[in-house]
Image 1 (cartoon, rainbow, N blue to C red):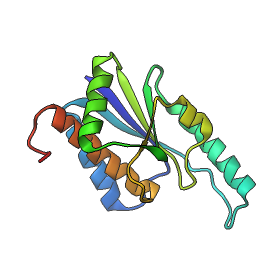
Image 2: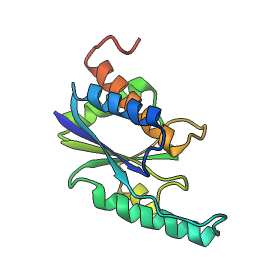
Image 3: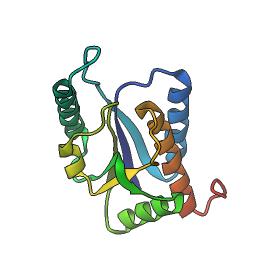
Length: 160
């Protein structure tokens, strides 16, 4: 059974988001050892300068890199990444498992994105959509899509 870890910057503030994530992590337990690891946000003052934002992204990146399990295949969630259909994500998961990947780490950055170091550590840069989503909502969406992809591979009824 493959381990799937979602590493995300920040804590979920809304109860419905926490509940949604918990539900999909529970459902993913059918096909994987799923977990979510939260990384502390780097606090910025109001109206930060571009230099302060760069420091923020780098510091969050260091925290993320510390949490990636050894040997995990890393997927960086970023807007400039490749877009996949649900079936395409299912294919990616199946190929990763078939190639011997024991664990996958999907990384969601903070509101200012991911550092180049995190993106460079990734074997795949994945975009959910050309639209922009709050990074906290992205966590719920990603977990749902992971559940959908695993259910596609298991020929379960969830995906129609």
